[in-house]
Length: 245
Image (tube, rainbow, N blue to C red):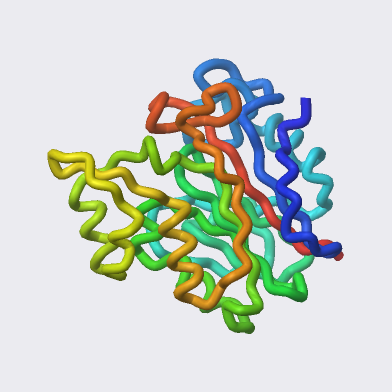
């Protein structure tokens, strides 16, 4: 079974991009089966074999640069592949020798590329990185303006299931009061938050207007996606992008 989901983006001949499902791997419950996270207490040999299978299915010769994601706003520019995960929540590169990857299990994966396909980025769009302005921080790495950047938003916890407290909403409103429109009040200081809508707004604020999305909810599709909020102890999917030589 192929674990790669063809996202039909960015439609540039020199750029490969994809995301994964939870299907088609060898990890055992609760990580069944295509878990790619090596930090979730899964059998590390299973994770390594899943990652080898990912490299084969992604069909890119470039090694994958993994990150140590810490739910912050830091972006790293990768020039040389490092075996050890780099601590950051977004990665940017101009190199043809590196595949960028983001791990998620409810958070929003965001992939970015310029029109020429020679600058790319992968962003961990959890609520904390988004509130820490990680989209603007990543776009600052590009040599072009946002109007020349294409964005892809991946599967994440959906707007009808992502309940947050008033403190989360307040964090976003301190960034931009117009983000009020991305929250629906539920009562008792609880709100439903729309991560994809938040990301779309922040992208357009930075002049990115070419935005594609796979609008699927990770929490409600248990057969297809891992979900931390649904299951707690669970695996991670990956979203990847690389420039082809």
